Length: 317
Image (cartoon, rainbow, N blue to C red; front, side):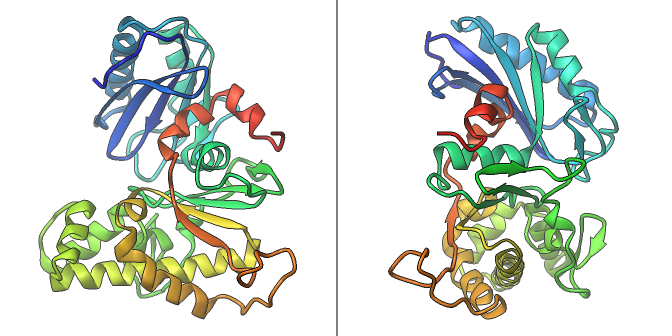
């Protein structure tokens, strides 16, 4: 368990991913007080038990009053009902009442949001998206999803499914991902990179290790990363044409290996996007091409699911 200070902890954050779960405690200023993480158990019941145990240790380690629990998780979700429905990277998590379970365990209100939405809010409020009214956040973790800040407000869509960009088909002959061959997630996610390397070499290694191998010029790893970076740029070009954002923030795999992805990604995005004229509202140094940045505050995501953060991130400063 990471070290804990003795300040009052306003919010407990729970980030549920396909490979790991993180439970963290935060004070009223948004400062991290303590954190635990562990591999995602094979069943939701086991995961909830581990989350409860971590929450108990964080609360007993010198923390003060707990106000709320914020939960971030990949979709699809029913955030209004507090249900995790059936995310493709969480097998067996079908209509899991995560909000009710954590309210029972922690004894305070809990709130659920899509992980990409929560990351978008966190980056907009504290990180690489500060100062922009139109932002796209791409998770690029185990899977691929987007959180959208449009016109200074989080855009959820009619039934909480806005931003499921990993399902877009980028290349009909591409690898499978998100239940569809050639999907953007098949190319631009940790799971997709790992599957591509496995197909090329017969070896199962992590995306982190593949990036390390690519830096040593290992041929298979280099080709897998180049293909991912090329499709990352092609997908970003679609978002540029569709949404015209001021900034695109990319997390996880990209944030840890930006040097491997950025050159090929930028070439593809510039080639595929509609040529943009110079714009009086754009920065004076260049055309209306969005800033593309690595995530800085994605680890704040779970706290952004709680109402205190959601209120401050609704367009007011």
